[in-house]
Amino acid sequence: MALNQFQIVYFEATRRCNLRCPSCMTGSNDPRKVRRRVRSELTLAEIRDRVLIPARRVGVHTVGWSGGEFLLRKDALDLLRLTVEMDLGCSVLSNGKALTRQRLEQIKAVTRGRAKIIVGLNALDEENRWSRDSDSDRSLQVLKDCAELELGRHVVITIGKYNTESFDKTIDYIVKNNISYNRSPLVARGSGAQCFDQLGFDRHDLEKYFHPALRRNPHGYVSYTPFFLSPELHTEASGGIRNNTVPENPAIGCWAGSWLAINAEGDVSVCPVLLDVLNGGNVRDFPIDELVERSALFADITDRSRLKGRCGRCRYQYTCGGCRAMAYFHTGDYLGEDPTCFFDPVDRSTVSEYEEETNRVFRKYLLVARAAGVYKPPTDLRRASAVRPLEKETA
Ligand SMILES: C[S@@+](CC[C@H](N)C(=O)[O-])C[C@H]1O[C@@H](n2cnc3c(N)ncnc32)[C@H](O)[C@@H]1O
Ligand code: SF4
Ligand code: SF4
Image 1 (cartoon, helix red, strand yellow):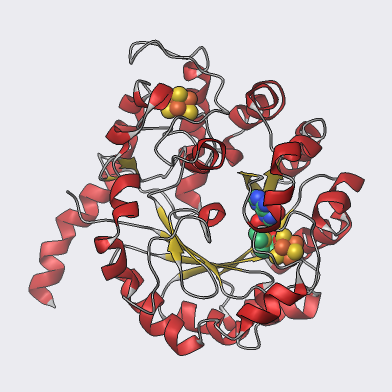
Image 2: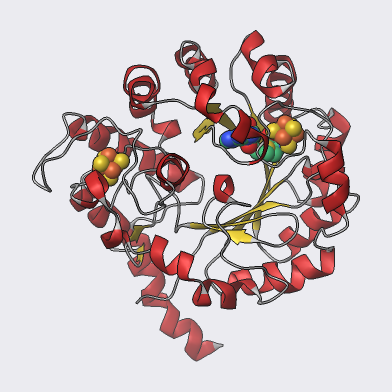
């Protein structure tokens, strides 16, 4: 098996928060639970020694800081400074409340302008306040300030039954402003467990409302499922780079197996929305590189030949993989088929009517991904490997 390569660490460094979103997956809307767990938060030294330093050995090049509200950590700026000093890319996922202009300037200064700011935005109207305990105006202002300060920006849209109708309008606004985005499914993690049955989207919502907008726009190709990309095209574009059977360069479809997720107390999982429910081990027991090598969960998730049901007989088993979180939260089996998918393949010869469109837009996405530093065309890879021996000789 190839050595596991994970490009991004998504790090929920605290459960504390200054908002109370009703379906919060980290339970940050429940002050009693937060108080109980806050004493077990990883310290800066633990984060450096057990996560950041060993993470580089498994290929990590970027750390996505999140929470709770990451900026409520007293050492948030120190962590950002450290990330950049270690020559790692960094992003901050925030609800925007603490992201004043002054705070953005501080972030820019300590990261030498290299931080990307990510805000959650579920809708442009009052639906945002309903699902996120915050008016969309706050997120929109942060996005404008970032543009003026020349900080990178990205939007996360958590999708569920509450934003089926408004999704198109939200995407149009984001695309018009040239911002990248990804969809994240509402899940039954933390306080989400109480509303998942009522608010989680189903295959009809996905087919009718979310998927048409997602497949149309290259800025949203970061990660979504079902992803009808021809496996041959990905192999050609990536130069054959993969993490066992998970596509890399660029990562697409379901990202489980492409990145590492860590919660505030050091538990590691294969996706942010699966933290606290699927545990691959704790970094206090093993540094993160050793932990992923030992973990049965990581071995399973990076082997897509083990997928079951429709995902197991599908032409897109490799390029899509089906949302592993949807499989888990609906069936209890993280290798099961993704029940929210609306594609019914007979076998690997069944081609989706959307493959051609997906291939065409994916080619445009490669330009976006290259500019964002998450994709290298095979010509660049060949050039890099051609100069490497010379570098070694002269070192
Ligand atoms: C837990 S928050 C932490 C960062 C920051 N406080 C924020 O809200 O953006 C990270 C992301 O998780 C999303 N989220 C919250 N609860 C969720 C749930 N039950 N299922 C899926 N995503 C959820 C939020 O919308 C946000 O985009
Ligand atoms: S979703 Fe984010 S902003 Fe809302 S309560 Fe949870 S951590 Fe706080
Ligand atoms: S059946 Fe599974 S792998 Fe195939 S497109 Fe649907 S979600 Fe993706």
